[in-house]
Image (cartoon, rainbow, N blue to C red; front, side):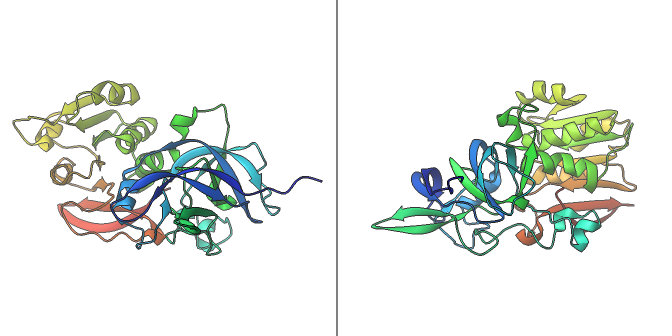
Amino acid sequence: MAKAPQVITCKAAVCWGVGGPVKIEEVEVEPPRPSEIRVKMLCASICRTDILCINGFPTQGLYPRVLGHEGVGVVESLGEEVKDLQVGDTVIPTTLGECGECGSCESGRTNFCQKYPIGATGLMPDGTSRFTVREGNKRTPAYQFLSCATWCEYMVVDANYAVKIDAGSIPPPQASIISCAFTSGYGATWKAAPVTVGSSVAVFGLGPVGLSAVQGARMHGAAKIIGVDKNERRRKIASELGVTHFINSEGLEKPVSEVVKELTDGKGVDACFECSGYAPFMNQAMKAVVQVSTRTIMLLQKSCCCKVIIYFNSYVHFLIVKKRKRVEMAFTCMI
């Protein structure tokens, strides 16, 4: 008879309150319950949303909190109801689940799954925590980032919030950004503003999200991909990933939107993806697109030039749609 999983003591990055501090603490991680898996983390990434969490958003003031939501790991143990995974599988924890049965999942809008939405409570779906951390002379439950927490050696996640991958298909450091940065950028080129073969695209901000948008544009057949960033060091990797024209925005004598239009015979690009969150870039991104039936996708984590409320029960991207010179506001979601 197999031995039942036991509590594991390990290290985790724990935030103790708004503004920090974030400390490496010894935590206890409970065994997984029936529909859950316990994962030994191999690699985790840092997203700006983690920094927002340290600064109080979207935590609702719930601390202590184990941070991190991007990562990859190996299933260490699992509950008896888990059928599609087994010990030793390599998985990516996600913030969005998928039941495959609700109206949203059946319609293909699995990012709006009604049974497994983004977990903004910092707890498991049953309303409890699998982490405890010592606080003074007692152990206290610790919240997780959202639906998962990856800045730890071990973590528990509902199996519906984990995606199995081929362990040999991609190195862990690259796999660790798939659940957030990559899906945000690539997903925008696929669903929010589908890039078409032969089209022209501009990407403002060539960090992980922007470079993922570049790859999405390339894979969908864009003929011209203009990358905009003030960091000259990003030119090389941007070119390797698909950028055909690089604009260093630092020290330009004219608005960057004008430079983009010069590269597109004065017309502007068919689609523009603003991935920096830098207010002047947002305005320039809207001016850089063709003025008829085109879109500028703003991949924001908080508003810089206007007030935007982002509800984490339906994790949204802020979408600016430009149609016949009229600016409309709408919401769309990650894949």
